[in-house]
Image 1 (spheres, rainbow, N blue to C red):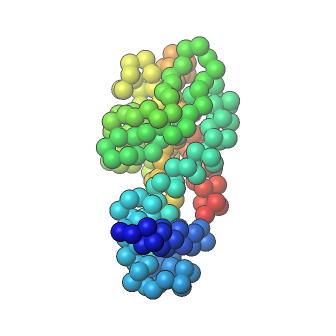
Image 2: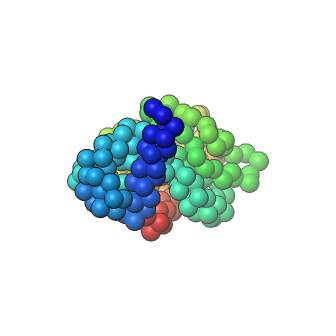
Length: 214
């Protein structure tokens, strides 16, 4: 492909990505917003879906995909994670799914000397931990979310540590999980019983803020 053709292709891709900043769209609506032909808009959108720049909804609409979700969530979620840490005293984290693993994209550590912590960029195999079970769509975890709004893990991944997680959603899709992790020695009852409702409320606030940014 010549440099001119490459530049033209990049220009078209930029037009599609910019068009979706105004909201989800069908291929024909993308064509209207960008001035591209419907067939060209549809072909490029499908290619962008393959690389996670876009997501195709069950309705046929296109929306911005995981690569954009991650950067937005990092920015939006950090203040909520900090507030959650300050309220509970425990480490709060934000996780996304990548293949068969989950990746920590934001973390605010507990100020206690004894704490549960993992660095940003840490990768764990699914379905380890409460966030892992949630992002792996484990049936028991999903049932717990439907019942209480949160799912917990008590010493399953690491003896002596526990966590409680809740989903961050976008249009009924789970796009990430917020997690509060702690030593079990500081729990009065369990991670979920102690903090589950607060974690679920925080996840809902992030979901709402994320939707407002669309």
